[in-house]
Every structure is written in structure tokens, then in C-alpha cells.
View 1 (tube, each protein chain N blue to C red):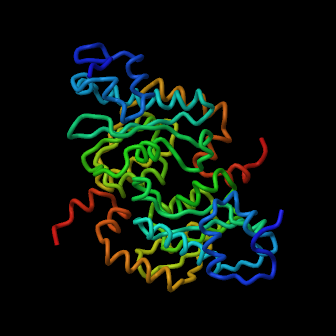
View 2 (cartoon, rainbow over the protein chains, first blue to last red; view 1 turned 90 degrees about the horizontal axis):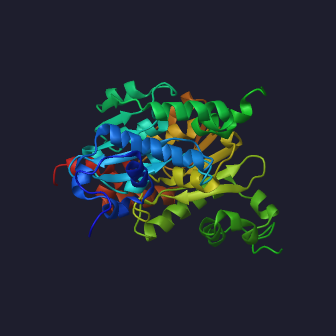
Length: 194
Length: 194
């Protein structure tokens, strides 16, 4: 099988966008092992941001996540928030990527998330044994990084300016959706009218 | 439209089993409003247990949950664990029922769960604004009831002997699946061989 992206080819935003959009199980038709091995932390974070951008273009919340195996260097799960798209009350970037990965030993995997995890996702990350989390935006979120470190996870901050700007724009455009995604419709209804 | 179950008919286990299995949006073809209004806390808990039994028969983890609106008395979401059935690393009874319900104001709803919620689900319950949770089995789980009460939820224990016996049986038969459902495959692999 010949892949579209092979070892030594440049890692462009077009390449990373295709990686973000293609189903995880179809990744081998898009890139070969050499190309995959060349991807860096910053590339995986950019893929998470490109998944967030996909969600934004669909009218949803712009948050994405990618899971990479330490053993193979391959992406084993990825996804984005689907509050709007699936009428799904809690499917954040992290939960989408873990659902996509299926039953795996996550202790030898890193999860890259475009936005700092909420308390539900942070709890899920340590309860499923993740050893490392890379966070792309801590400026727009309330910060569960300390809790994750207390639970023994390695937490790295790798800010992606595109992702930070995208989330800030979404929050300004759709404050009610941002609040619902974090604390549910009950919190939106409890807010005083502006 | 004439429903199969109408006001005044006896609430049998056969009726509750049909309610458990039919899709939530199809419930009005099964029972009319009068029948639905006659259902008690114990009946909703039994429906959660019958969903757990459905999962057990499918080879999965026997945990079910039901969400009932305080305003209409109707079931607005229900489901069971799908770790095995969907290869889903965190879909517990509570998450299945909330996913089924979709985007709703859960502050005027009660969630009935056949088993005491794990820390991820307990966090999700208060983060999505639930006001009341009814737990059917606190003997087989580690107890997040105190945390939920601290977060302001009303927590009622309504033990269902059938559900308790079913989960105890599953735990004895499939200890590895029970552990994976709680703490992931990494915890199973970290266990010494028996």
C-alpha cells in the first residue's frame, strides 16, 4: 500500500488537516510509519486544534483531542466536542477521543487536548490510567492541571495560539453554548438575562 | 393512539421489562400518561435493574440507569453500561442514560442508577445540575454518595435486592471486567496474576 504522506515529506497544515479529518482506522492509507514517526508534540496539538476548527465550522464547540500511543507513535484515538452535533450533553474533546480509541491500556499513551480539561474529563483521565496529558490552552479554562498532577500524571502545557484565539472567539460569540458545555442547560437557565 | 399499558393496569415485571427495552422516544406507544404517572421510585429503580439484566445477557457489565422528569413524570433517558457491547471505555449506566436524554435541564430530573456511581459519573451528575439521585446498590461500590450530597444533590438509597444479587454475581464471575469498567485496562494489567 502506498500512502499519500511518506517519510521525509513536509508536515504542512494541509497534511495535518487531512490527518485530523480521516477516521482513525484509516490513518494508514494517509500516512506511512516514517511520516507518523516524524510528528512532534506540537504537530499532535495542532491536529487537536484542527479538530476543534472542524467542530467550529459545524456550528459546535471548538475543542479537540488526540491520543497517541507511546509504543507505536501512532494516533489511536481522536475527536472533538459534539454537544451540538450529536445533541450530546457531555461529549467533550477528551471523551470523544477516548470513545474513538475504545478499550485500551492508556497508561502508555498521551492525550493532547486543545483546551484545559473540565473536572469530569480530568477525573476520567486519571481513572483510565493516562500517564501524560498535553494541554494547548490554559487561558480560557478553569485549570484542573494541579489535580491531574496530584494524581500522578505528567501534565505539559504546549500553547497553540490558533487554538487559543479560536476558543476565545467562540466564547465571545456563543457564551450560552460555552456555559452549557461546561455546566449544563440548568446553569444557562439560572443565569440572569443580560 | 392506543397504548398497550393504560391507566389502572397492574405494574408487572413484564411491563417494566418492555419499558426498559423500548427506545425512549417510543415509550408513548407502550404506555399512556395515566400508566406512567402511576410508576413509583421502586418501579423506576426496577427498570434500571432490568436494563442492567439486559446488559448482563449481552455479555456486558450489569449496570443500568433511568432519568425521570419532575415536571412530566416521564422517562426522558435510560441506558446501560456498554463497555463490552460498544467497546466503550467509560460508558456506564449514568453516562448512557444522559447521552440518551440529550441536551436537557437536568435540575428538574431524578437519575436512578442500579449501582452507586463511580467518581467520573458522580462528577458528571453534579456538573450537569442534577438535583436528585436514587441509588439501588451501595453494597458493591465504593460510595460517592457523600460527595454528591456535599455538592447539594438529594441522594436516596433504594436498594433493589435483584440488582444487588446480579452485580455480586457478575463481580464474582468476571472480576477483570469489573475492574476494567472502574479503572481501565491499565489497572487490570497492573494486577498480579491470581
